[in-house]
Image (cartoon, rainbow, N blue to C red):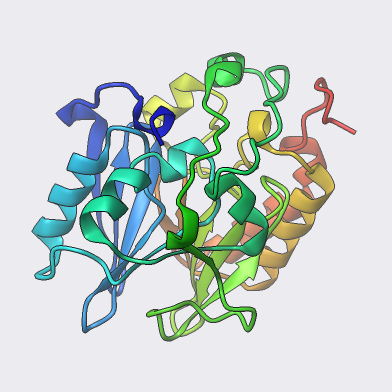
Length: 272
C-alpha cells in the first residue's frame, strides 16, 4: 500500500464539486478524475476513490454532503490508480466493504500489475506521461469483495452493474433505470483524456476511453455499443463533466457508430 499513498499535492483550485447531477447523485472532480456519492436514504455509497493523496478532500466533501460521516460501501468501476488512489487510507479510517468485478480483484489484492500503457495511443501529453503512472497492484486483501453475479449493487437498490470491459477486463458501469442515469467509469469520457488542454477546459463532449490505458479495443467498442443501447439521459463519467438532456442518447449512439474513427487509436500498438 505504500506506493498507493504517493501522489501529487492537490490544491483548492484542483477540486470542483459536481452538484445535482441527478436525484441523490453528487460528484467531486479532483484534478483530472471524478468520484461520486449516491444517497440511499439511510446513508450513502461512494463510487471510486480518486487519486493518491486525495483522501482528505474526499472525506471533507462527504462530511459536507451527508449526515453520516462514512459510506456504507465503496463500489469500484475498476482498479486503475486514479480510481483507487485514496482507497487504502479511506478504508483504514472508514472500515467499510469494497466491491469490484471479480476480474479486477488480482489488481486490488496485490497479485497482478496492469499491462503497461501505450504512450503512442491517442496522442497528447497525458499519453506521453502514461509510462510514469502507477500500475499497481494495491493490496486490500479481504476488504475487497466481488460484485454479486446477479447484477445487483450492495446497498444501492434500483441500480445495476453492467460489465463493460475494454478499458480493463473487469471494468463495470452502473445504471439506474428509473431516470436512465449512467455512471460510466472509463468506458468512455466526456473530455479528451489524452489532452491536458481538454482536461483543463472541461468542455463536455463524448470521447472514447483513455487510449493509453485501454487494453482491448474490440471489447471497448462493444461496451460503448452496449451502453448506447440503454438510451441514458444522464451521463456521469470518470473523466470529464456530467451530461444530461434529451440529446444524450443520440450523442452516445453517434459515438458508438463512429467509435473506430474517433476513439480507436490508429498509430499505436493497440490500434488493430
